[in-house]
Length: 496
Image (cartoon, rainbow, N blue to C red; front, side, top):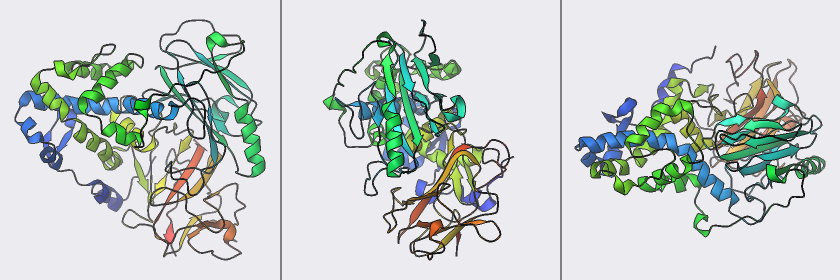
């Protein structure tokens, strides 16, 4: 049984200053709360006096939260595939993007980079026909190929945990596809036309291991079913200048007005249908003129409905980010010993608010059986880490993170980027030759200066300023002790 957060942690979680305080003034449908400040800033008080507009706004807030992952996935796809040929960070649809190394310490293109796996990424459109993916024998190496549908659900996960490390051939089929696959090809059914395979292959980061992983990446292939068994050269990608943007995907989504947002959502519904369990939400969408398979035109709606619809995005966005504190009380998020994490990722059912929050702050999250990412900004919720102090994370004897894959502890500055340091070490993990204490416990030294030659093997260098810690637990154990069932917890990081 999971341990509950301490009273101080729970109370403080409800009043996190960084997220602002919600002052409820009106209940929307299904208990949604409208923020007074947003109402004033966005001219929403006028909407409050129009009953029809208010009802439309309340429905549109729910619809926005429901639609947010699908719209975000589409803009992410556009951003990462809008090139003619594969490069360092993008690749056309149907072609692999192969990251060849960990991000450089001065590379701030991606927040919270990892120094454990090399990404091998593939975007597919399976609306017209299936695609067949081939992977080589990984020779026991840990890897996983989670496949996300358009709604960000991880619908299947080939990899060491589920299918072993032998050579594999599998087809990804789209909604409603019926046909025959070649012998020996396994079928994975995507419920949507959009598929994002966000593959990860474990790598130690040495020149020799980089070369070994590169060889594995180069043996991976993807071809449409119609070209299976034939010579196949991927066609060049097409570039849409209108999709070029230097803004983050989240900023692009949040900058869209309601009419544009819901028009794109309706277009995406044509090839990325709602799940059967979404029927109640689909009925609500219809009240706003949003019907799967049909175009959406806000200008054809009643004037009051248009007014309410236009005022929905900002409070919906506030609701999504506000779930970071409300989720602690619902159990969707956990806070223990100064570490915040969630095991409600990858498969969301009808928990639309959780799905939207993970989309906003951790798009591409795995199922918890594959990975959990506890994060800590301080020894407890009232304190922040700072390089002027020295910290220790002590694991009692036999209580290092219980995983079947691997674990690591990564140091980030307050912007979630690697920290430059004299020994070029950004993580500590089980691949380090950690020194145990006389009683069998293991201390990790988290500080800006070396703890001394005898302890340097266990040193995670910190900046002189504030910093953030993130632990990665890949393929966490499901039997005690386990983070997943609450029978194991990450110890609190303590200032010396």
